[in-house]
Image (cartoon, rainbow, N blue to C red; front, side, top):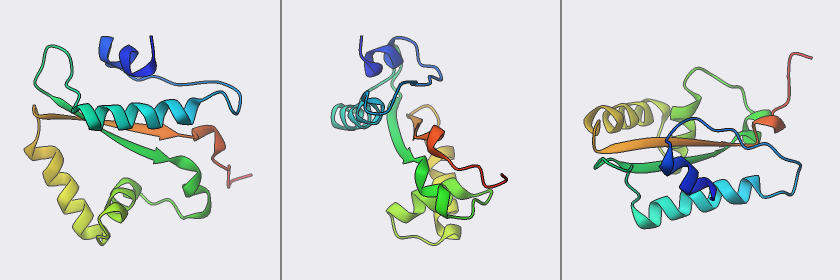
Length: 116
């Protein structure tokens, strides 16, 4: 069973753990591409899964604010944070029951502890 099949059989939070080069990033990117290509729906619902892939290492060199997700997603659309926040809030609120947003965080273990 691959990662996509596992998620669809039991939508939940999962963590991929493995040594470098074992395919964690490739698995997440494949899952995102397949879900977008197939307009994957959660089993037993009409909710289309919208996967949002985020490479966490980019945050090592940026100041992380409370609204970092708005900034990150807004950068795809070349929007200011205020515009991105409004767009994303509307997107989530207006599409309850139509879409399930799946945040795929890649490389959480690559984040640098800036406190140390």
